[in-house]
Image 1 (cartoon, rainbow, N blue to C red):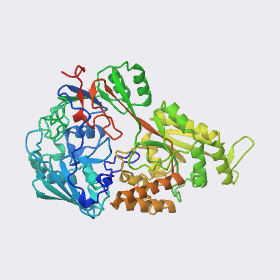
Image 2 (image 1 turned 120 degrees about the vertical axis):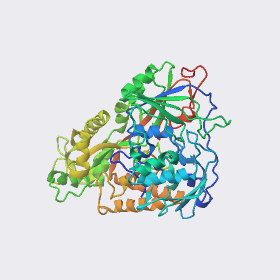
Image 3 (image 1 turned 180 degrees about the vertical axis):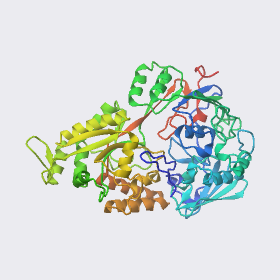
Amino acid sequence: MPHLPRTLRSLALLATLTTLGCGQPPAERQALPEPATGRQSGVPGGRLVAALRAAPGTLNPLLTIDRPAQTLSYLTSADLIRINRSTQRTEPALAESWAASEDGTRYTLRLRPGVRFSDGEPFDADDVVFSFRLHLDPEVGSPHRALLTVRGEPIRVERIDSHTVAFELAAPYAAGERIFDSVAIVPAHRLSESHALGTLPSVWELDGTTEPIPGLGPFVVTSYRPGEALILERNPHYWKTDESGQPLPYVDEVVLLLVASEDAQAIRFQNGEIDVVSDLSAENYSALEAAAAGRYVLEDLGAGLGYDFVFFNLNDLSGAGLPAVTARQKWFRQRDFRHAVSEAIDRDAIRRLVYHGRATIVGGPVTDGNRLWRNEAIVPAPRSLEGARARLAAAGFSWNADGRLRDAWGAPVEFTIITNSSNTQRLEMAAIVQEDLRQLGISVQVVPLEFQTMVERLLVSHDYDACLLGLGSGDVDPNSAMSVWLSSGGSHLWAPGQASPATAWEAEIDSLMTAQLAELDPVARKRQYDRVQEILAAELPLIPLVSPNVLAGARRGLRNFRPAVLEPTALWNVDELFWAAGAKNLD
């Protein structure tokens, strides 16, 4: 199936509730209207300064894996159908319209006429066929290859004519339209020879002698100062215009400074050296808010797609040589025990103390930031030590005179929670959870671990009791979480990689997630995923805590700044950004 999970932090590039959500059957999805390109018509000119945490691993859009390279590709490349980061739905890009067969296995895309690469050469169907052939070639090593595979079969691409391309899928795939987002289209006229010679992976290395790279995005990389910055200039042949017909992008130049830490980025933003900033911590957001003095605007977008949670070790430990952990699993496997732990946790304290109020309490794994797929019937349960005590008592637990909780066999209830030592916020959350459970009579020891050591315990040795962790996602679609919710998934954290589901409720989730993968009726698909969320809320294999808010800022005078939950948060509509008259970066 076409998803690319990354253990513990989903890097999924797919999502859905696309134009299917408009209520039309697949065969009728054609001639979509042009999307609005901005709130205001802009003034051309000026320079925009942003920042990356590190230099991109490559300038080659076929090989983007790290986040800086993905951001750069977003600014310099174009795809056939794009996910609008604001609406979270698909919209036309290089394909001006498309249609799907009734069974959802064939997509026919009509390409936009008159489009040219940044070097002036025309773009047509041959470039699309060539690009997808490269993304699917295992010798090239494109990370999109897994995304373009359905039931083990690569997508087949067919040129119909110079401006029409058809894609054949091995099976119906509900998120089909979103496959095309972030799959960069590259110039056949520049790369055919390199591909034939086998030198494609070394093309456009980041070595300080960068030549302009022909692309279809709003900007072109023109220079790189190692350790300092990348310079991008306006693509004179960019295909987009605003509502009045004025060519986009508005700004002439984008400078991407290399600033290693979020703290340093926040300081340079405050000092006026950076014009837009995202991924702000709550602490830096508060500091910037206090020092704003009208120089910049800050945006709190509310919950992102990621969330923090606690989970218990529910792996089958037969033969693992972990008798102490196995003994404690008799508590962890009780749903009432997991619910009692959940009820005892003061999520509002986490929100206030750890995130300075810049987080959203969550009741399930689909946060408020996901406007298309969250089951609105699932709401966070209020904290209740009384309710937690009642659950435990009904399950056979009791308390000593000193208030310590004991199980039905008289053993004291105590366990460890591991978390990654490099994440200060998780350590603070773990301390709050530790104190909350102490009030319930449970003794908890927090064990900070180096990240890779923690991953080895979670996925290999299974030598742990509980863990406090977070998951993020690159998109809103249910398929981006397949590896987490399928019992066989590598990121099915509480018991990953099961040969068969260990419980009836995990089997039901498997069935629902597999069914929604091919369900073309958006109403039925939403109903299936709502049921998945209901099961997760009832069983609590992951005890959700809070979703950190998405925090961003921009220099005052920057117009059409509309940060989004989906990445790239501040630069997703970079072609629409412009400086108001008199703003500092307008020449």
